[in-house]
Length: 107
Image (cartoon, rainbow, N blue to C red; front, side, top):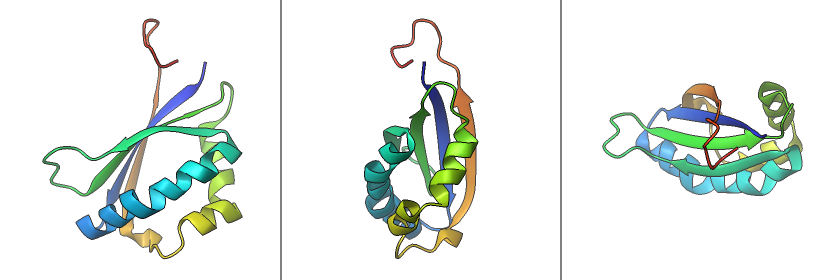
């Protein structure tokens, strides 16, 4: 069973969110599989007052999501993905590991 993670990125401005959502995250979709990461989707919240991006990702069973993320963030693929983006525009990242119920279609 895969390990699911909900990540919520808070960005400094709506412009930074728009760039991250439209330019940066689509780049990750090509590099994630090289590290065993699968992206299931990314969203913004309707009428959200904060510039946030919600991401559902998963990792292979038994993988340590933190270790996979560290390895990815130290890679040349990640460096290429974030080109032209000021990472200080990400002011917060909340991570929640999700446990699927037995009847969940995502497992």
